[in-house]
Length: 346
Ligand code: PBG
Image 1 (tube, rainbow, N blue to C red):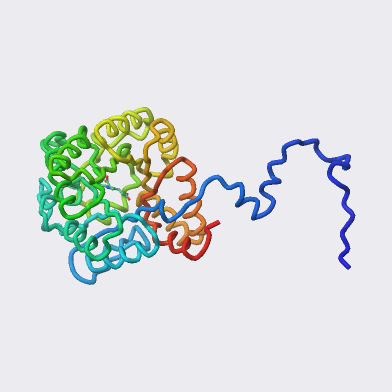
Image 2 (cartoon, protein in one colour):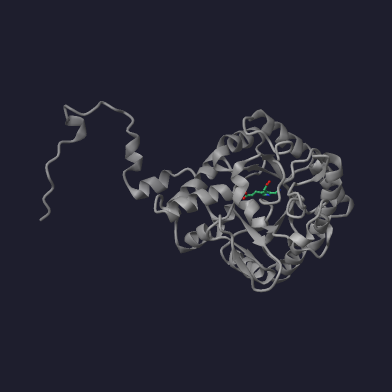
């Protein structure tokens, strides 16, 4: 016989607050919390950035990004297969260019057989159903580490756009589905759209790094692509001032007018206000990049036992969904997708 302790009904209690709304009621049980949950994260939300390096069977850890390696083409194809099995819709490719191949003008960006183009072709052949995004910018290829052409200490806008057009076309010819200009030159989206269309590549999508801030959080990425030691000066004459919000709206507006299919905000977690405002204002597909430094912070804290890494990963990704992001570029993509395959996250 189960003895139910006599407990007066709340309404008959003299000492209880007279509340009509008690928000905790919807939080009391796991099933109710799931039932009222407003946002979900699925593998469809993920874009997985990969760092490429020349050679065969190579996996070199990036020290400032625990769990992330530079990988050779053969491994990249295998990671693409893994991503497809995990329902990750898209990969983003970033090359580590042999320093011998870097020069003032980033010439290697225009080599149709460069590491990125070869890897795109190989992945498209073996794993045709996964999307491939290529970064459009010169920084992995220039000896000075800047995204554009440098003359007398200035980044040349229009001359750089000319090169970016050709880089985009080569990437499209290799089979890349989405070109993603990350260079922040003025007018590059319109110029690239026009050039792709002129080449008959009307189906190639453009994801504009529309609101890209000059951020310290890119540090570990620059280690990964080998531009942190070579970068001269900073990128503040082309990447945005992080004190600004309205400027991000103008950048997005321009990129959409010029033909961007999707826009991106970068970095991620410190810029949720920007993500939210852009999504609210334009209602276009809006992506966010949880950048290398954000990844490194979580991994470092988790590695020290100061945070639960899995929980920090999930909470940070959910914050992007809450802010209105349609998708997230994140180095956590395979890890969170594995967890999603195992069952529900929350
Ligand atoms: C290069 C580029 C950068 C990132 C993506 N593309 C670095 C930079 O602008 O210096 C950063 C990504 C990351 O930090 O994870 N144009």
